[in-house]
Length: 272
Image (cartoon, rainbow, N blue to C red; front, side):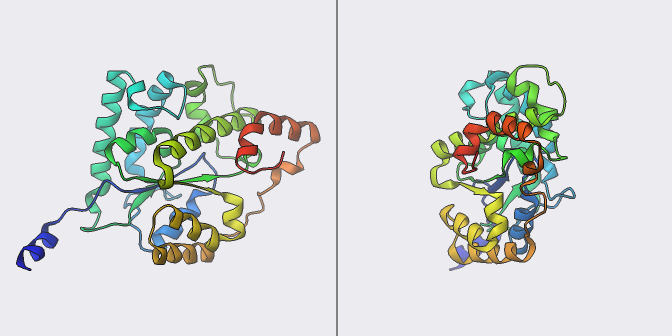
């Protein structure tokens, strides 16, 4: 009994099994972050206005493009990277993780972070956190193409596709949306299995409690806690007016976006 007491007093938090939330920018991850925090998850201390974990921003800024230039994909393994790119990415992620988890409570089992661009570095995260789970939020790429948030195309389009970025346009935005989400889904399904779960933003807004609770249970979260997160989501998530905004485009533009994103739209259940 005395040994168990001392073990609990001096135990360290488990930093190998976080829950990550990622997506292409503007998908609505802010609402998921709020629901997790409301249900008692540790989601970090240094956050921006959208709830992104800012401890990881320098790592993401420094390493995403070097990785993409070597792989041209979000579906890669560490063995696909050169020694210099791999060692820098692994070292800098572990340093960011150590900084992020400084305030993580002892014996914490429910923790993670929300940063949409985490989806670009999942193999690097998995190397340091072998028990990681990933919650992948997907929103209709045609709506995403019209979003004001074009941070990811601006930063990573040329590195992913190996061509000069021609500037913000719906066509460039949906191309990145389709490619990035398809490749992340391939990696998540193959590598993480049940620890990968995907939610459509539109389903989340329509039935937040049922959609999120079911997804988190499938992702391995305890049923009671998943229900608490689902209840918290129901209180804060609403269907925004921007859902379906692409339908207001002229027919030719609608057809062009649907054609560019056709494979991903079909895979994720969006009618074309």
